[in-house]
Length: 438
Image 1 (cartoon, one colour):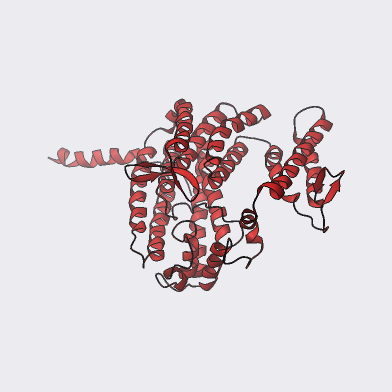
Image 2 (spheres, one colour; image 1 turned 90 degrees about the vertical axis):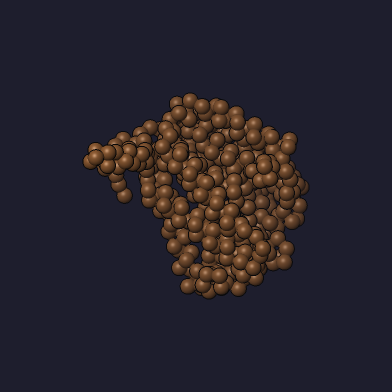
């Protein structure tokens, strides 16, 4: 009788051993922030006949189950199937272009059983798995490996960009940069990778002169752009591995010169006025507040109105009267600022900092490069979305349509975040057995 009495307990302990090494702090933090996100969504839609808050919690619950399943499954198996994952990722993005559903000028969703699924969100996971496997086999310590990584990323990135989904394509860029850095790419190479984009911006800025510098009526650039081109030439001189250093400097400078001139051409001849305003309105607070600057202007007012302690949950006037558009999705942080104040914002930021710290710790303690790169890819994805989303709500970044992880309403985004969490928890769960940890 005594033996039979202890059998259920033994079986229960064996069952729980499947998750023994999980990072439980990370697990409960994500559940907590998801629950809190549903509460804030409820607040933004309290006077509307919708139930997005319920769907937010339901999808989060499904995501938790998926994450627990993935956590007890060996992540190493994904390394053998990474090309299949890559192929399925690209096929799903191609399917969007053929049978996808359009909304708000973009074709990003596939309707399945009455629900709209956004493959570009799940493509983030596919890219992370593929790059982790590729960089596990050969690190990014050579330019050949770096170029191969960029070539692999180029196909899904291009398919996402054509939808068009600029926000998600930017997330892809952050993932690639983070994983390349962790895979031992030279920091100077990473600077050179993003330098043409910076050139495209600086070439359009005339300061400190009133007019751009013109050379033979062919080249047109600002002084800051010229300084940047010279600086990148120096970076190329010292960091590129080829022996002929002068060619390194010339090549890096030419790349930035080309990027800058292309940026000027796009700005002057391709972008329309409303597109320019949308990109620059955050630099001019109060400009066009009834047009392209409306979302950000209302968001900043709502956050400022919360002051230190906020109006209280369900009591924010701008939140309850729906003055901030898309507040349950991209601008959910403005509801936190108005109803819970500066203190509430700090608490949310602290929780996200803990989440990022736990992801970094898992990357540092993983038993192999593949697991470590998986964790860094997820960290890069979460951190970039966090910075851009909060930046645009407070007026420090242009409105990019990037959701706040685990808090903004979005079923595909929520499942993607929990799938990513499950993969990272699998890395944590199958580490070497040892005392760990804070």
